[in-house]
Image (cartoon, rainbow, N blue to C red; front, side, top):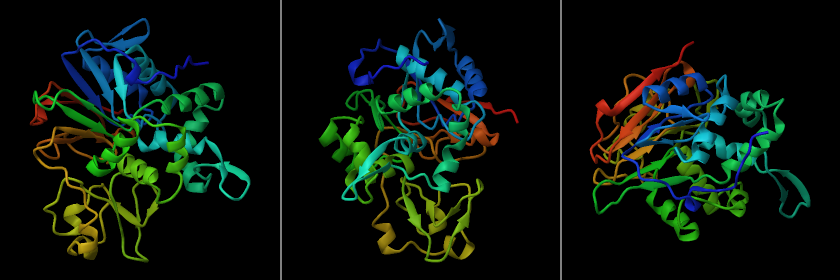
Length: 338
């Protein structure tokens, strides 16, 4: 059984560090994670990876899809609990919370899971549940631990010019302000989890936007088959590309749009739904988007750290030392062995 503690970072006092190492979506690639941590200068001390002068920030999506999900969680959890790492929730962790949480269906007098156990939902979490089949108590403990983690975090001092932000998929100023007005920071409570399962609620919008980004719907009757075998009726978009004119310029995912749609100009309705993260904002780190190729900033102040590790891509880190203009030379990565 894994020893879990319901202590979030707001209750901890951390010693100062000289810099942070932000790590993208792990998705069960535990061996590659260990290699990357070692490359970054972290060493095991009493079983926990630590660095004398730096701290890791995981951008979420540690679970699902990969071959060593439990091992990856053990590494990340021990680092967070020991104080050598932070972590924000990815959509996969929040989905796991909802998939494993029962609640009464309002007005119907029956209890169901907050995330229905449909074929697609079950398929997404299948590898995780399979790898924890002989460790059910550990899995329950990890789900409870997920509930103590934030949806977003902010570091440094804006006035000192060394601040940066971390969220899994999208920094939406309006929704983050609404969340802060209720909770004061990126953390949440049990009621938020229930509300997030209620379609069109504010909590659902916050959870969806921050952990999954901005999805634009495809025209009715049009769908695309993603590289991971899911049929999708929407596509992921850039949230910093307010100058985009066509849907192709707005696209931010590895799967292409049908040619005719890609060349179509963005409608006024869809433009009103776009999110704008200005170039004068503090640096922002996200995961989520399955990038390929050599890691580099996607804007001067935005870095995506998801380079498709579980698809035999790269597990990527960014070495952050307070700079406000992100640098390609600060990316560090390990390839995932087939």
